[in-house]
Image (cartoon, rainbow, N blue to C red; front, side):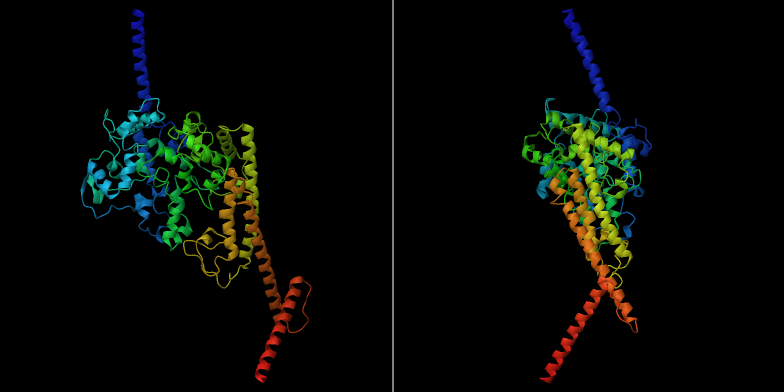
Length: 569
């Protein structure tokens, strides 16, 4: 009896200690996966509270000198109606047709009639029923979300939005669209379209991880500006693009913006109003933007062995299991986009670029520096990721081959570039001296530049320049992406290498024609300047020119004879 009492006593003490430990962990500062570089960039200690971290993040997030706003080309363009949804902080204005002091409950009541799709999605979300998560047994694979709710509550307590000991009852329309914890608000003046910072008020950790892409992506040879290319500065990359700002066809230009919204909102990946983690983990969520000629990651993945397994076996995987446990507990036996790109040294994070090496497009300054420690360390991180399924030797064999294949594609592209640039410098492109309008400001003329895929006037671009722009921006990237995603047809024959060969052939053919034509024109000018003397036929081009003159003379003579015969008749 005494022993049983002691056991009960010790069990009670152990339970108390464990409860304290769990409470301590859940109330600890938000720092688990936020990189040291971010705390340093923000001037914070790693012991910073959620409020301190959030305040520092949002101060930078809204700082125009660090990527917010319309950018340095702002005077060249204006938003159109759809822009308010793509960059809500800068452009969204509440509709003036509804003048009401909206109460918390009224939002759902009204929108169940006006926009039932929204409310249906919200009701099926975690936001719509937090207690459904709280009441899950610990054996349920979704039970990990209980800790996430507690983390959110602690974040809000740190910010003074939630009282100590008070649970978060729900996440309703008004919390996201007017302010967390509000009971009512003026529809005409207080309604907002949530941006990433609005989501970050509750999800501080995830917001900090995403924002850390700015701090962990610093190229050693300045191949790109710090933080580029990344989701965290995707809108900045859009508005700082000269041809995007120059385009008069704003509806077409906003086609770019639709895929550059991860900086400004979270619903690029977590679709409103369900914000489903299950959906965001599936490759189709990434496919919205990562498809097509300039970044065909989705096609490359789906036509790889990884994608084949996903398409044939993915319906047997448990998508409710958190990503970190997907293979062990979720029956996943092939990686998805999220698994490969969110994993870093055994942890899963919203920082997607900590392993990036080739980035968006291959360039010589990357190819020439692959042995630099910055690149080799990132390659080792990829070996670690691949080793979740493959042997270390297989991973290294493929990654080495991938690098060499990308360098081969880059080499043929750069040779074609040198041909085109020389034609441009020699002023031999069609119409270059007679019919080559300058592109609209702030864009500047260039040989085979990016703008030539989206703007045309007169002989700018010339056909050969469009071929080259298509070559480096599309075929070269397809070649690289096919290699990176293990789709052999996507880099050897169907796409990639074969198309690079075709583009190079067209460019070299055109170079030959343009230079021969220039030589003939020069010969004609030389002949016209001679007062006497025979033609110098010491080169094939000059002999061809002479033959052409002879043919023209024959044709001219025939024409004169026909005119004389008609007159005589």
